[in-house]
Length: 338
Image (tube, one colour):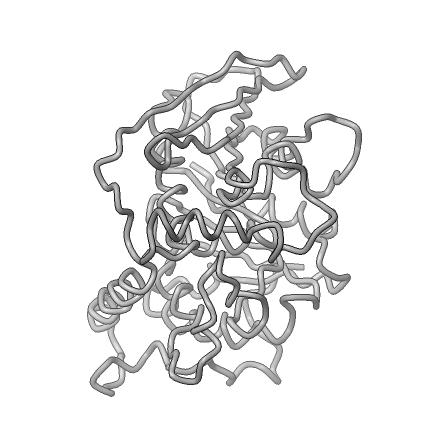
């Protein structure tokens, strides 16, 4: 079940520094004061994440031939995200055409085949998010994690440290002051740019979703790209201490230092008042995630929208259950209803 209110034992718990205290130590009690603090927080995070070294990069897209997948039309789409490099994406569109534009969801994952259900052999059925959502009438665009594009070989059989060592070095040569999750924001923005060119997509109803790595990507994409109108993040490890955010392909070891005062309740505050759903499984996320949601809910309350941030804790481990995914889809239907 989806809950927007934490259990009583967590209700007073918050993450420091408080979102309702500004840089001068004054209590934030109005939406106007929060908007001012929000601007400061966003600028601070953007400075930390770094910026694209090629801000004027041409919006170049390579669309491959359509594939008839029965009820859907599929198409591989390569979107330029750096000079000479195109990230792999997969577009799924319901075959039934409508007069009115459809809502769309960007799905973030290691590869495009798993969320799109390619091939349809039943493997990883619960992670076929793009196929499920297209069944419900959404246009979906799955985007591959750029470090997988750099590696460009099948996963498995080695640690992430070994797998990404060369790709991290390549990325740091390209943009030494750019964090991996800062690059994620850039790539995600170019996905929204592409979807906005499609006449059958409602530009005002675009959401994002991801599980694990994809959940991390969804959090950062939505925090800094306001065109995402709703977010579903599954077992990402919402708190910096909850997962391997210190990895060089994400943020870096400094996030573990006591002097590092940023944490992800601040990103949830940047997402407010847009709807955010956390799927937890008592693995990376669970009841201990409530202080993060509570902190952000204080901000959502200033907008009069405190129920828009919520959690479904299936409690069965890292992989989401079909029940939790189905509930998330129904929640998204409500958030993006015309």
